Length: 281
Image 1 (cartoon, helix red, strand yellow):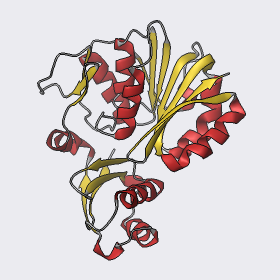
Image 2 (cartoon, rainbow, N blue to C red):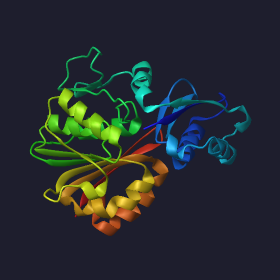
Image 3 (spheres, helix red, strand yellow):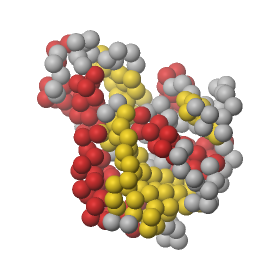
Image 4 (cartoon, helix red, strand yellow):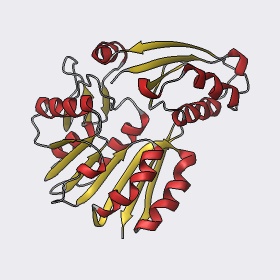
């Protein structure tokens, strides 16, 4: 998948919460990943099929930034075959205490319980993003042995691979993007784990499995649209772990999930991004 990388440069007068609100507005305009650089500078990534330079200026003009006139940005087109180069240049490995490493195959690492190799190629889904990091931190609190796990919108399959290494019995990873599908298979092989990877969306979920743990790190609109399908595939007492949205979206998600016997269990926020855990009753 081709992407546009937009580097934003904001004045030091802009407050942290204003930067978070700007990211929220950009997410609503189609941007699906953000990487903080220094001070108020950050990178934003948008799939080429939904990218519009005009929308960037509209978002800025309609934002709550206190110093809109100082905002500068640069745009770079990243063709799918160049994503590896971008990743190699910009993304470090991530360590979660003694629990796990998420690293590229050419990086050194410290001894931890779970060492995971992720070479993302053309797909997004690394532990550098707050949403993925929050899920990994929460997974460290779960006994995964013998469980059935769904990783919906899996990207690199980093979450599914981790769950399998933690002792999950069956792990299914689904993504609508062909590059992500191929990358998930490659990463599973690099980590010597047996997971089921499928190309598609909710309709591709196995008819033979229901899940103890259902992971979905996807944008808000897709989550809201697919909650009814997710709920059908979760065991009573099972967990639905959602991220990919902002703190301000939690109430909307909770109100929607209540209709499908999913009740609030836990939440975490980081840099205005949110993690919501619900239990099937």
